[in-house]
Every structure is written in structure tokens, then in C-alpha cells.
Length: 414
Image 1 (cartoon, rainbow, N blue to C red):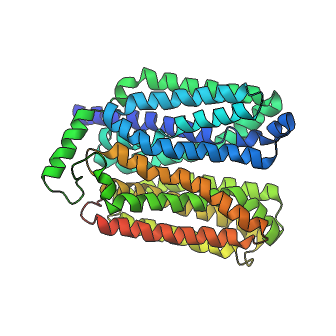
Image 2 (cartoon, helix red, strand yellow):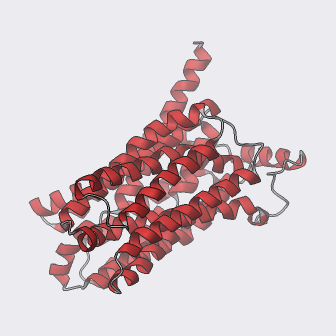
Image 3 (cartoon, rainbow, N blue to C red):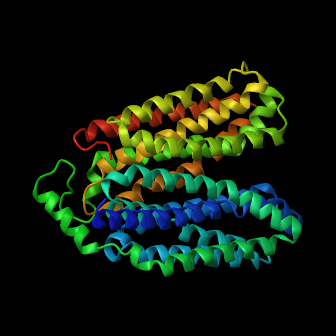
């Protein structure tokens, strides 16, 4: 290995590590409040509808900001936007910790949504423009794994601190952890600097060459590209499926299989761990398989069939844990290949705004899915959770294939 190759590898590792750290912290902050709902309910006599509304506010604000922050990334670069998002997350945790009533919690949810909305446009812009193509699959893999680890760590951390001390200290501790993340990012700020002018020039060159994925003239012209909205739909359906399973699987399993709620929550942990492990494997698969759309289709089809099987009430109770683990594996293995497909569909020079729009589908799906399936469960139809999630996965497969067809010449192995 030459000196230049060693330098490139070191740079890639540093960028991937920093971006993945930021991404993991953002997922951690998704779940700093829900584990504390029992404490908040006792402290302020809120009902669960009021507490659930806080998360809806968070995701709606995040969705709006995510769509807009991509334009900011393309204008001023990723680094200042990233620092701003992490800083807002710290402020949100501090506001939560000092809440004296519902209004301050709403304010905290708004600020948290503002901070969360920047991460995907920043992360993917940095990865796509600062990591060498041969390492992109690994970058997407680690980026996704840290997100799931953030989700897994938050409930354990918040409940442990709240049980040992109180809920306010738990939120202050979360703010302190995010401050450490901000310090690490600041110390390594030179590695997070992306050249906005170079990205713009690359986009103009691509357009002049009349690339099929080039962007027509105009700031919003990329919105005319069908691939952008197909990717948005993919993430919208993805989050409808996953957020609904995360919200109501324990309740549905209790009704269908008489599985205790605690066991149902354990199955969700297995699904998250399966997704994390699957992403590690998926990075290797995406590196070597020349047809990422096939990887996505096969893995999601397996998860779809297993999810639908849970609705039949035929699954032996002793096997349910393995079913949830396998569902998570399917999602995880497909994720790096999915990201390669989206990269292929992203026009040069406007990646920030494209990722901002595309990933806003995640937040909107998270806001819509649980509410939709909550109504079905309240109506006495617990099996519809798994049927509906399976339908959403089928729609994910359909949109992924449509993305592949719209960019056939650009989807290549990393």
C-alpha cells in the first residue's frame, strides 16, 4: 500500500467514524423522552395521548427541517449545519430537563425536531463526497449500525439514570453526552469540511454532459425527477412499517399469542440488534454484489413474508423471537445496497437538498404509521398491524425496483 493509499484510508476511516458518531447520537435523541413517559405522567398527571403528541410534534418539525436543511447544506456546506444540529439537540435536552409544564415540553420537542432534521442531509453529503467509492458500502453499513445502536442504548441509559436519580438528571446526562459528541466533532472539524464550490461545479459538468440523472436549471428543478420521489416513497413506507412494529408489536402479540408485553418488548430489541448485525453483513454484500436492487428485493421479501406470517397466529410462541430477529436481519442486510441505489439516483451537485427531501419521508412515515395502526388496534384488529406492515414492505420493494429501473446505468457495486 502506497503512502497516498494509506492517507486516503485514514481519511475515510476518520470521516466514516465522525459521521457515524453523529448519526448514532441523533438516533439516541429520538428516544430520550419516550422512556421517561411514566415519570412525566406521575409528575404532571399527563395522559398518554398528550405524551404521544410530543413525539408527533418532534417528527413533524424534523420532517419539515429535513426537507429544508438540504438546501442549506448545498449553500454553506455540511459542517456548520452539523454543528448547529448537534447544538440544538443539547438545547432541547436542557429544555426538557427544566420543564415545569406541558408548554416547555412542547418547546423542547420543537427544538429537538429542528436539531434532528439536519442529520441525514449532512451525513450522506459528507459520505458521498469525502469517502472513496470503494469504501462507500462500508460507510453506509457503519452509519446504519450506529443508528440502531443509538436506538438500543437510549432506553437503557435514560431509564437507568432516572431510576437511580430522577428524570431531570437523566435528561441533563443526555445533554452532557451530546456535548461530548460536539466536542469530538469540533476537534476533528477539518475532516468534516466539504467543498461546496467543487460540488456545484461537478453538478454543472454533469448537466452539461446531459447525464440522464443531471439536474435541469433551477434550484428546485431536481423535484421534477421521478427517482427523487420514488426514494421518498421508499422511506415513507419503510418508516410506516418499522415505527408501527416498534410501537404496537407488544400489544398485538399479547392479543394474538397471549405473549406478555415485556416479552414483546424483548422481541423488538432482537429486531433492532438483528438490523444492526444485518447492516454489517450487508456492507460486505453490497461491496461484492453487482445488482443491489436484487439484494434489496430478496431481503425485504423475506422480511415481508415473516411479518405477514405473524398475523396468521400460526407461529409457535417459542419461535416468535427468531422471527423478529430474522425480520431485522432482512432490513439490515438490504440497507447498504439501498443506499447505493439512492446514491445512483442522486444528481451530482445537489446531494444535500435531494437527501433532505428523500429522508423527510422517514419522519412523515413515523408520524403517520403509529396513528393509523393505533386506530386499527383500538377497533379490535391486532392482526392488521402485521398485515399492514407487510403491505408497506411490499410497497417498499416496488418503489426500490422502480428506482433501479430509473437509473440502470448508475447502479454499480462500490
